[in-house]
Image 1 (tube, rainbow, N blue to C red):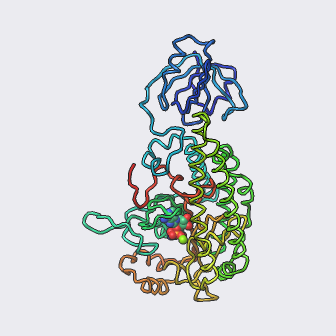
Image 2 (tube, helix red, strand yellow; image 1 turned 180 degrees about the horizontal axis):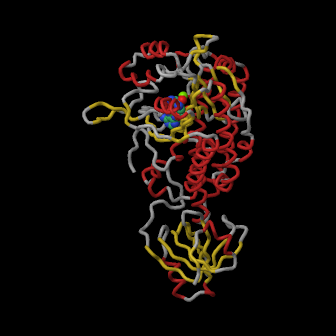
Image 3 (cartoon, helix red, strand yellow; image 1 turned 60 degrees about the vertical axis):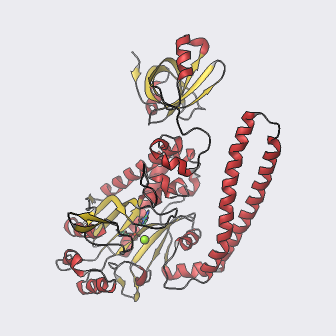
Length: 500
Ligand code: 4AD
Ligand code: MG
């Protein structure tokens, strides 16, 4: 009897017969051989049906099987360096458990809206497999890191009575006749739990009614939020740095193959080692206004112009070749032409934006908050994540402690990921003096009654404390090198997308 195993484990069965259960991801056939690429969730494996070696019935089964049919395969495990997992299966028996109907997602290119409408199926693709395996790795590393540091993982509620991050992005629901908001952040509850348990973290879904469609915003995203009693701003930055280093190094160690499937260059991730640069908001403003930033954008513009010229030339050659070429070749060049057209429209968009960005960087005024493009520019000056601290208090949340050295500033920090990814972490030291906190709540025009319980934390044994929130999807978009956060979560929720 052949043992049943999973593709991930094939390395333990070289030269032996095994049974795999999975689905047909893809099929390539030639006259006498059929290559069935089977996936079982743990990996992908080429299963080879060689006509002269198998009975006609098996050959016919292999011919009949359609993309995404469910399969039971028995075969011999052979080492083959060229295969993605390093092994292939010489098929000896094949059972079709379910013959799939014509599958909508084919190897030809599809638009992203088409794919998002079929997200429940799109998740089966190789690229999504790689991203979700990295997502799982990142989550596991986060838990391991905090476990080692002696934190308790405790959960904050999702129905909440108060705003944390401003009142403009609240999702309001009806909680037995009383208005309630979906949590924007577990922070206020984490603060209460830190006063009870010292070092805690929450890790859960958070919600923001972001009415803009950007590549960084989801309406529902996952945030890990450590909160530590007796911590100040510097200690929180040290912890944030250690966490991000740990996450990235674990991905490099355990998910290198998945990174390569995504075409992600691991070298930029190798550099993610402590210490990360730390600059103040004021220094960041100077950097933004500096000639270096202007030069960076000029260089971008030149690079885009030459890329555009090269792509246009390539498209022309392809069109000329298409005349009179075989249908198969024509399909390939259609695919490439579609890619080129897509990239060209991106380039046009960027070329249009560069003069605007140059202008707004040059004229950036101290006191404003950084927008997405400012963060993008700032983060490109560094080869690893950068910590920006001491923002103007006016652009930050009510709970931030003021800098005793300069009352205009808040003891807050953001971590910006390199390569233009921008903010992945926000946090800082909390206001721990009762009267100051009451003043802040009033200044922000928040209803004092709703924060009565939170104010209690400053009445009974108030101590300096700090914490931060790391956005899982933004961190993943950066690690995986994706342009948009939408592919980093199994079922993205954003404006205009509630299904599937
Ligand atoms: O900077 P934010 O708003 O900070 C807080 O919520 C604090 N209460 C956290 C804390 O101190 N405990 O959000 C933290 C992080 C951001 O840096 C970003 O990575 C992510 O959450 N984030 C989003 N990710 C995806 N879509 C959105 N709409 C996001 N908004 C914030
Ligand atoms: Mg923030």
